[in-house]
Length: 458
Ligand SMILES: [Zn+2]
Image (cartoon, rainbow, N blue to C red; front, side, top):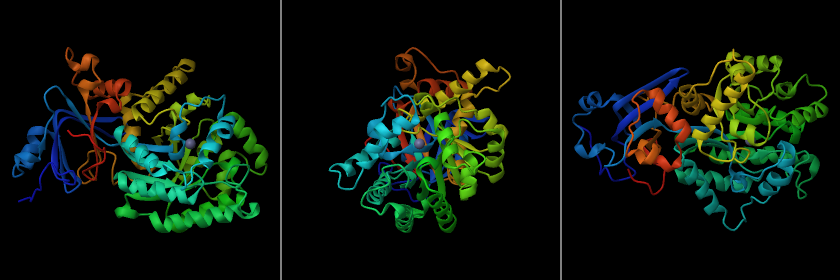
């Protein structure tokens, strides 16, 4: 017999959520149960499926373990969404328009990140608010960049720990032509300072709370990193077992510039190969303009891509050829890339990924579409695969940790669903969410069965 605590206790991690239950555990597979339920036991998914089957399975659980939609709401239970690329200090400056990546970085982003220091008067409140907004999207896992500073990254980790979210985070590393070339550091040794600080942050934070927090070794991109820094970052990741994240082939001017900086390399991807940064735990943001040789390098090394379509539109970077990445066998997740992307809402990122692929098809109708079901897969199980957490989160498969997002379908229907009923097929529910979903419809988010969205009560 289970010993259940008071179900109103937000720390309690054993319960049943009822509603339309849906997940996309593999590419092309969308599962949905209209009258469904998800049983969570001690923070793990015990079962998901038709409500009557779940009821039989947990018949000795008390009635108060069951959570059902109140009058006027129609619940949709999903695995928590996974954002594989965003920048914490940039969130306050979303929507600063510029013609392209490099001028945008110089004019808006570097000054903002440079000021993101621990002495900033409201930095703790800002960080808590950031993670609350992440959770308010139904995002339960986020892979993030901090600023270059160790102290504010330390505070960001502390805020991530408080938030209850699953967070992979690293301080940005850079030592060339950037704010990372700090005047209080001997310029020639900046890369060593960056490695030392990253190592200290790994010691403090990597693996915290049974792996809920992970450090990510985060060289910004080849434009702002010396060869020494990139090679050191690769060695640090190998030593520590940490993932790597960086940016790759986002913008044509950037690619030209990298070519001048690294004349010995065959391509932008080859710059990272030479540094030892390719590998199955490396996540490359954007990858919009890869050549066939670069696709081969990425695939052969098991490297993964954070597809950031809202950002690619916002900064005029281009149409990422998702079909080519997938055809090459490269694993892909979705990233909001705040503040290159204007918002944290992953439904908008899914929509943008679909529309990117539609735009590619206007030029070549033989290319495949990206369906809403496939987009949902990228934003859940695909993201978990990219962050190295495929056996932990990303779907409603029994045994995974109970990272869940609960939405009210009535809140995305016209006129609050008073005059409409969604069609029952999971594909149509996925379309509805992709085109109209967002934080206004969120009714709960859980990591390991614990609430992470402050102040909301289903
Ligand atoms: Zn980015």
